[in-house]
Length: 465
Ligand SMILES: Cc1ncc(COP(=O)(O)O)c(C=O)c1O
Image (cartoon, rainbow, N blue to C red; front, top):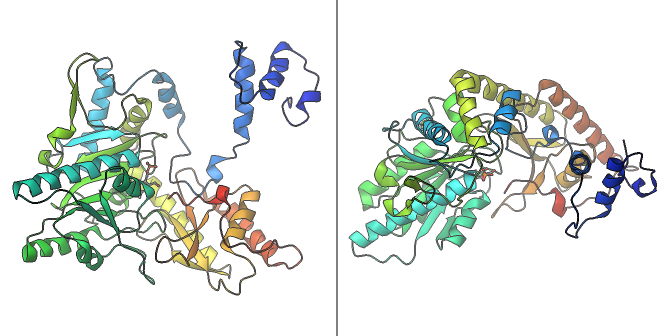
C-alpha cells in the first residue's frame, strides 16, 4: 500500500498502523518522543530501503550481494553473538579458529595448524593489523642494530585507500609507485628503486582495485631476495589479497603468491568479497609466530577466561564468521572453484562483447585477475560522450557501472569497471549488454544526448577506492 510517497500526507489512513507510518515519515531529524507500533516502524523502514535499488545490479562493489537461505538462517540465529565474548561463546570462538587454520592451509602456510591469525571487520582492518606488525618488526630490527626508528616507510603500487589510511594514521611514509604509461601495476624494478633500511615492507596487491589485475608477487619476492643477497636489506612482503586470496587458490592453484614464498609474512583477505560470506568479515594471517609481534596482542580477562586479542575493534558480530565457516564446509574447494570460474567466464564473455560495441577499448579482459573487466574510450577527445555520461545513463536505467580516473600519474585515464560476483547470471549479462547498446545509441544521438561531462558527480564515484 503506497501510503508514504510524496502524496502520503494527503492519503487517508485505514488503520492505526498505517496512520503511524505517516507520522513516522513526517519525522526525520528529531529524536522520537513516543514508543511506536513495531509493524508501523518496520514498514516505514522497509519501504525506505526498497528505494536503495537492487544490489545485484550494483556492478561496482566487490562485496557479497547474494547469499543462500541457510546463511540467512545462521545470521538470524547468531544475531546475539558478540565475537569478542569468546568465553561465553566458545563454539563461535572455535569456528573462528578453524577458519583461520583452514585459510592457513589454503594459503600454504608452513604451520597451518598453529598459524597466527584473526578475523576482522574486513580487509581494511586486516590491512591495518598487517601494517602494524610490519612496523613493529622493523623497529625491533632497527633497535637491535642501534639504528634510528623515526622514519619508517612502506612501498606499494596503486593501492586501496585503506593503505593511505594506515600510513597516515600510524605515521608511516607512503611510497606509492605511480602508474606510468601502460604500466598500471607494481613491478619488481619499481619496488627495488624505493626500498631502503627504513622500509618496513612492500604491499603487493592481488587484485588491484582500479583495474582488477593481480600484481606479480612471485617476481617481486625474487627481486627482493636478490636485493637482500646484494645489499643485506631484508624487506618483508604483505599481500593485500582482499579479493585475490579467495580467487587464486581456486582459479590458479599454480600461481605462487602466498606463504609458499618465505618473504610473504602476512596476508589479508575479505571474507565478504570472494570469500562469499555476508558483509562484515575479513581475515589477517601471519606466516609464522614471530611475524606477529607479541607486544601487539592484548590479553583481556574481564569477559571471563583470559583471551588474547589483536584487533582494532572490540565488540563485533559473530554471524559473518559463522557463515564464512558454513561456506567453507558447504562449498569446499570444488564449490569455490566452480563459482569463481563461472564469474570469471562471464567477465571474459562481456569483455569480448563490449569490445565489439565500437567505442571502447578493453583495459582488462577478465583474464588472470579478479572476475570482471574494465575499459576506456578508444578516442576520448573526439567521443560525443564520456564514460561518466555512460555511467550516469546506466545508473538511470538501474545499473551501477562506475567510471573513474586512475591515480597518479595516469589521472588522464578514465575507465569504467564491472565486477562479476556470485549471483550475476548469464541472463543478467545479456540484459546489461542490451542496456549498454541502448546507452551508446542514446549518447551518440545528437538530439538526445546530454552535455559531455568530464568528472564523476559526487554520488557516482564508485571505484571502491
Ligand atoms: C585491494 C583492496 N584492499 C582492501 C580493500 C578494503 O576492503 P574492505 O572493504 O573489506 O575493508 C579493498 C576493497 O575493495 C580492496 O580492493
